[in-house]
Amino acid sequence: MTKPLSFSAFVMNTPSHILHGMWRDQEGHQLNFNDVNLWVSLAKRLDEGGFDVIFFADVVGLYNDFRGGWDFHIENGLQVPSNDPMVLLSALAVNTKHLGLAFTAAPVQEPPFNFARRVSTLDHITKGRIAWNMVTSYSANAFRNFGYDGLVPHDERYEWLDEYVDVLYKLWEGSWDEGALLQDRESGIHADPAKVHKIHHVGKRYKVEGPHLVAPSPQRTPLLFQAGSSPTGRDFSARNAEAIFIGAPDPENARKLIDETRRLAVENGRKSEDIHFYQGLYFVIGKTEEEARQKEYELENKIDFDMMIAHSAGGMGIDLGNATLDTPLEDIKTEGIRSTYEWLKQSTPGRTPTVRDLARLRSKTNRIVGTPEMIADQLELWRDAGVDGINVINATIPGSYEEFIDQVMPVLRKRGLARNGYGKPGTLRRKLFGTDRLNERHPAAKYRGAFAAKSPVN
Image (cartoon, one colour):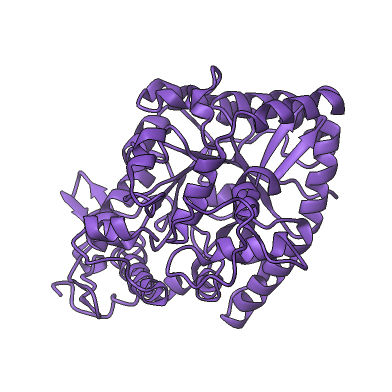
């Protein structure tokens, strides 16, 4: 049987996310990003249209300077202003039934104890549909915003993330035993203290006593997303992630990355199927190929390629604002996003990539143009390469998603490449993996019952 793909809507609560400059277009309603009704309406449409997740990217600092300063980012709305997606998710939760709600956050933003509390609260509000994209943050400005002198080195950031998730796993999985919450009016006992435990975590960065202040939510631990493609990032993902976002330039490179990460997962005691992979793609759709190509041409003339360069180069921590488009990009060693340069090299085999290639990396490499049938053909190739889902990038909100739902989804369903609706509402993890809780192979599972042997008053 054909394996159906999962679909995620890749968005950000900001005027310009991936395809920059499109907020200037009449159809670019992302200009109204401050209006909660824009997001509620979109979430409802995605929920009814068969999407599994709405995934919010996020930043907590400006990208690296462009042309010697940061005025460019403010002037063009390059992911600034940027609102907190966690606050928005509550509104979306009560207006949807099936849609998973994913957000991005890094350890630098918040101590783990309070983060665990907020996430568990969201998981209760959503009835188990919350997901967290685990990131380390790559913005020097972000670190300075939280009291650091600058960007913490790449591998050290992952060491930090390792301890951060360890604290969270202890709180989410180990602090409350199953059956601890009684809520027995007759006896007057709300919860059994013998089944609620302090965690007494002491590590390099954190000392957390506990217990977790929120009773176990439907998933306990939210569904765990990750997007790191560096060797250190892949190792972290192989151990911790349940879903990984990738931006491979073609199905063959996606296959290599997926096979390598699955191999690492098995080496870490997990099964290869414990991780799903979501490829980032966006679509230019036409009733005919000619119409689609014309729409592509019009889109090309609307995208701001200076913003595309500022975004990609800024994420790597370099300023290419004064470079020509044909400037070659030699081996770049950066503490920022290392995966960007790796994808760039893979998309330009046999030659040195240039600034022009970098500008088109996000705007053209992951673009599929054609009729719904042609798009379905291409998605089959990605599926056959091992991709489990598609992270659908937008040019405009809500138009890009409405077109995909109305025109492409019916073709995908006919081919078995998309699900034919849902049953009763359930958790996001159950929808994707068939179970509400993390499986026993995940490192968080070792904390189940780990604190039970201690005194109830511990």
